[in-house]
Length: 62
Image 1 (cartoon, rainbow, N blue to C red):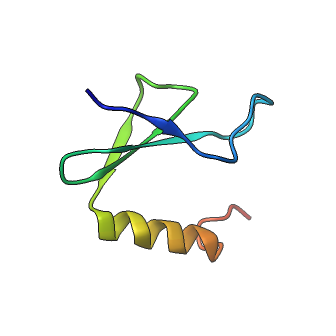
Image 2: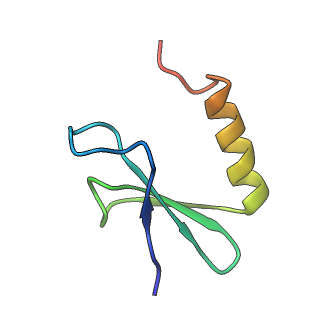
Image 3: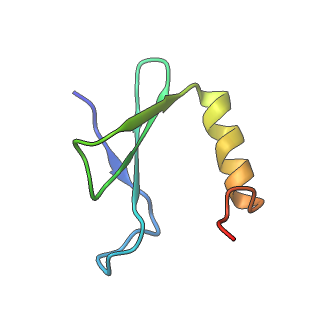
């Protein structure tokens, strides 16, 4: 069974929410508002690289 965890900064005010799950060899990501929708699986190093890029603002919308 996969256990999804909501991001610690998510709340009930309708903001953007991401959930993560530890998978056998990867980290899973999904939109908490669409749990049956698309999902992404990244290796640990890829997940860390994505988090670092997000923190640096590399994926911010204009």
